[in-house]
Length: 277
Image (cartoon, rainbow, N blue to C red; front, top):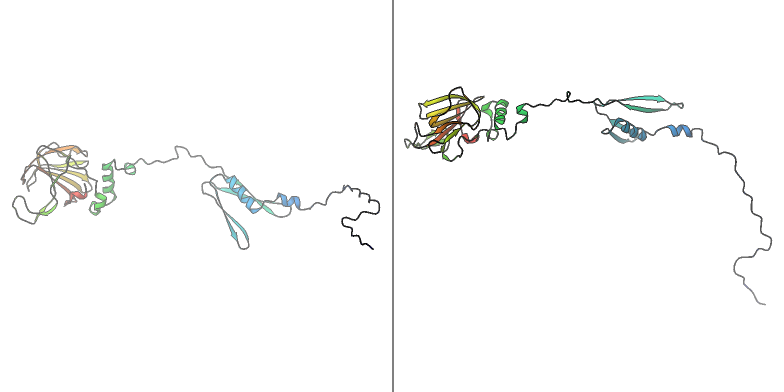
């Protein structure tokens, strides 16, 4: 006997079943009674974003997560107060509604601009810098770093002939003489310039070796002197400006040649002029 193995699908031996008719569902699904209520609520995060939008550009909303839930903080500038009101819902929950106050307009009359000279002092206004320096503190306590550059050069070109301090006297040859100013080489008749604006307080002969001398008071205890002059072109009480010609250099008084002896005095005491130039 031969055994036959049949592979593949088994053929149906009877008629095919009829297709099941589709049943139309006409009944409405039951709706969640609280769905509309939840839909109307705004999440805390949404409340913050709406709040920031209503408050205008520049409002900052900070969001911090606490261990027990979501904590929202909003920083509101003092210039734009925001009023918040709570309205209750039918279910007893509250949703914050915010309204931003109108920002006040700022007009030109409300703006205050200070055009005070000391407020706009720059390097191009050396007299303003000096005035501010002298009025800010006692002239005797001004440091060298602060005073540097506050006075102008008394000559068009400065070439040191003898520095401030102790030296060998060019007149007697003795050592240990204290030189009260700075000597600058200059041919006789060279224009001598005011180191800063001020009032001329002395012009004439200096009996202690200065020869023809001019003194200018710059205020608050600061003075400059110009010595060994051949002539002066200013008088006592005259107001002078920085850089104005006040005299001509010479070799009068205790002098061995044409030059300018320039002094800076603070409260009547001489100081090194290079600390101010």
